[in-house]
View 1 (cartoon, rainbow, N blue to C red):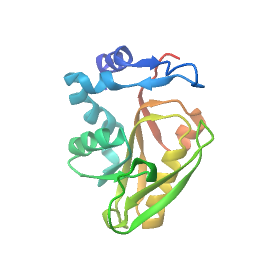
View 2 (view 1 turned 90 degrees about the vertical axis):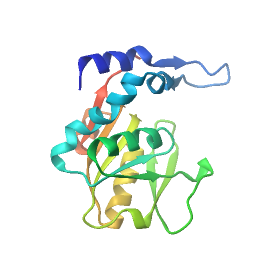
View 3 (view 1 turned 135 degrees about the horizontal axis):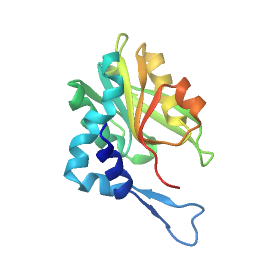
Length: 180
């Protein structure tokens, strides 16, 4: 990944205070989607560390993963499988394979599902997301892969904020770090 891309990702990122009832700031990554150069470079940058592992499919969780996942899949020349959350109101029809994450940074356990017919034994899965804070959702996606006989080759995220030991264990790669 170019140093220029990392610099632009930091420049285009914002922390937003959602108001007096909020317990934490909210990340605003919308500047990444507005910049055509960043948008064009994200897919290739996300897949570069895992290209040698020869992923056969990219999986990414709702919501921003539905943008990053296809960018990464296109850069690899493979397909994309969206991971759905029940609260997003967009569950697809047909059989789904589910997993529940460990507790995330807010203490929530997130349910994730993929259409069972889109992952199978022999698939080599690259997980992609915008932000990995605890790796809870990454673990749930790896569990889904395992239950379907697919092998996760690793995870690539724009920002990784989980403990280094967790990132190493789950093979998580970051494009950049952001100021607190």
